[in-house]
Amino acid sequence: MTPVERAQMAMMLEVCAFPKPGNVDRCHDYDDTRLEHFLASTILARPALEMAAEKAAGPGEIIHRAVALTNTHRGGNTHFGAFLLLVPLIMGDGIEGARRLVATTTVEDAVEFYRAFQETSVRVNPGDELDINDPGAIDELKKRELTLYDVMLHSAPRDMVAREWVNGFHLTRKAADLLKQFGCGQEAVVETFLFLLATEPDTFIVKKHGEAVAVRTMEHALEVRSGLRDIYDLDEELIGKGINPGSIADIIIASIYIALGEGWEWDC
Amino acid sequence: MTPVERAQMAMMLEVCAFPKPGNVDRCHDYDDTRLEHFLASTILARPALEMAAEKAAGPGEIIHRAVALTNTHRGGNTHFGAFLLLVPLIMGDGIEGARRLVATTTVEDAVEFYRAFQETSVRVNPGDELDINDPGAIDELKKRELTLYDVMLHSAPRDMVAREWVNGFHLTRKAADLLKQFGCGQEAVVETFLFLLATEPDTFIVKKHGEAVAVRTMEHALEVRSGLRDIYDLDEELIGKGINPGSIADIIIASIYIALGEGWEWDC
Figure 1 (cartoon, helix red, strand yellow):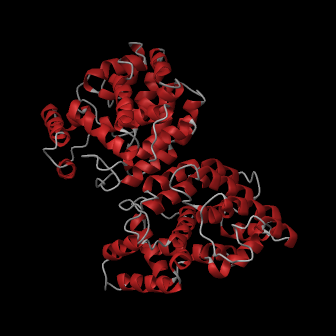
Figure 2 (cartoon, chains in turn orange, brown):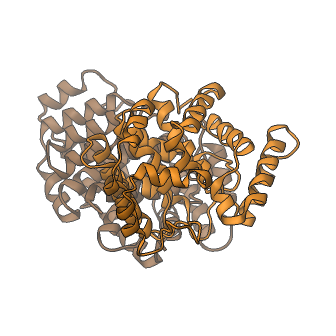
Figure 3 (spheres, each protein chain N blue to C red):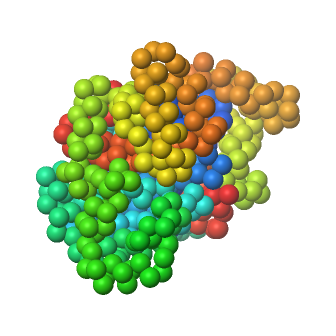
């Protein structure tokens, strides 16, 4: 498998894994985002993933391109966070190289990232001085000479995907190790997802529903892991309330990408 | 969407459509072939589909390549019949061109096709004088100067996919029109699948279970279409008995490919 195919396989395997409490999976859609939207993005993102493999542009421009290619259906933004991780991981040929790469990003990368953001409906913290929805934000980036790394550093306290950029892809590494420890195939993906859900507050849930809901979701996931609660029951509850751990899903995609490159078997 | 992306989208949309009585879909696997296998093939077939778009080789060699690329997982052969339709449809830029293309295939195309066949476990009629599993079959092809078109002509009475090659892609055309008549999205795919299931004996079922089972399956599908039977009930029965209408699925993939090129909307 080429790195591009590994990235596409990671996107496909993540969304198909079932049951993943609260998220779109092979047996659950949300009204506005369905399984086919995630899989269409998996297919349509390929030219941007090829750009990353060929290092044909800076990471900001490639992320922008990936978002533009996959923003063509009614499912909205499906993989923004995943691209934010996959692009440096592909360009850096793994976690070590990605660490070096993110440290060398430029103001132009930040500008491209903001442009990508502005083309989607990704939820951001209102009132932030670098508010993505503020048309003046790009001028502000340039004035303050902020690189894409600086932007991620700024977002890291409130966004676990941005945090990966500044902590050396810590959770991506941990989840890739968990995948291998849990064995092979889709069951390992579900176990790893549930492990992260029980141990990390999902920042996408925090942004949408607040800190308390994110913490309660961790407790529920821990109950499932402890055999106190049925996973299908939690899945129904979260789906019903629109509580979807989207950022953990992004990290799972990155971790499947890494694990596949290290010999983890998806097919068993 | 490029023709290659249309082909990948067609493969993805077909396997995800639910419920498709008897076949792998987003909520049903078989023990040995699961949803991920079909979607992995969708991703991994791309270089062969690119070859078709670029007309980089003959159709036999490209079909062989597609089968080889997707025969790398434990799910076995997932799309042999689909490639037999998609490759000429891509190379010919539609049905008209595909009709012309299949008529000009060579003995070398036939040889490549047999090589592809021999690398899979696709079921063939035993005792046939061009038995694919007979190591001497390729010599026999050469001696009798049979082209890939001749091979399809030979198989047409017993194989509805081969029949498409010799009848001008009749069912592909019909199913593409049905998709448009039934509206947009996955519901149209399910309706079209059910329509074909009720009106055409699936030759894959015939090969595996005999003519009587194929005819009974048509009757059951007609009962569903007439409101006399629940589609989920039929799905469970067919899955339970291993009765999977695999050839109709191949034709549905080809028809989605054509319909997407004619403006049919998958996303509604």
